[in-house]
Length: 352
Image (cartoon, rainbow, N blue to C red):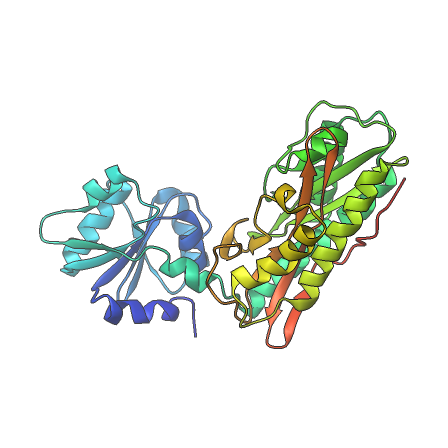
C-alpha cells in the first residue's frame, strides 16, 4: 500500500471530497517532494501538487504520482482555484497546523473545511522498510560520531568547540546537518535537560552530556550519551548507574501492544524506587522520523499502544541543580517480538 493509499479511509470516515496538505513534513511524506514551497490536493481519483516555477522539474521528478500545477497566484489562492475547478465541497485540512489567517483564506463560500488533525501524523508513525533503513543509517552516523568525540574531547575545550567538532564529523559521515540544536552540557550544566552548548570550558572531573542527532535523506536520529573527563563526583557515578539500569531495562522490555504510559513507567519506576523520581521531569521517549518529535510518545499520559514499525527514543535522565545530570538515550524500532536497537555505541561510563 502506498503512502497516499493510507489516506483512503479518511474520505469515507469524514465524508470528504478532497484533502489539502500544506505542512512541509506531511507534503514530503505523501509526495516525495522536498521543495520548500508547495501544497497537495488529494482526491479519491487524482493527486495534485501545486508549486511554483522554481520547482517544476524537481516536483515532476520527485512526485511522479501527482499532477504538477505551476501556480500563477499565491499558494493558498491557487489551491482554492483548483478546488473550485474540481467542484468539491467538503475538504479535509491539517487543522492543528494551519494558521487562523490561512484557514480564513481557505474557507471560501461553497466549501466546507474539516479538520483531519493528526491523521497524517498517525500514518507517519508506522515506518516502511525504506524509512527504517534510512533511520538506521542516521543512527550509524551518530554512533561513529560519539566514538570520534571520545577520541578528541579534553579539558579546556568549550562546549561550543565540542559541538563544532561533533557536527562537522556528522557532516563528513554523510549527514545533511544536525536534526536539532546539539546539546553539550558539562559539569553543573548537566542539570539542564536542554542545555545547548555554551562558552563554558570543560573542567577536570566534569560529566558531559551529549544529546545530538543527524539528518540523513530527510530522516533523523537522536542519541544521548554521558561521559566523564577525569574522576567525577561519586554522587554522579551513583546516578549514572541508576539511569543506565532504568534505560537498559526499558529497552529490554518495551514491545508492541504496550501503551506509551506503560513503557514510560518501566524507566520511571526504577528511578523513583531509588529516590530520584522528582529529578526525572520529562517523558521517557518520543517517536522519530521526518521530524525529531513525532508520534507515538512514551509518557505518563500516553494511552496509545505501540505497534510494529514505530521508531522511538528511550531516554530517561536524572538532573540535580548545582551538581549535574545524566541522560542516556537510544533509538529503537518496535517489532512483532520486542524491539531492535539502532544506536549501538557503548553506554558504559567512559572516563577519559
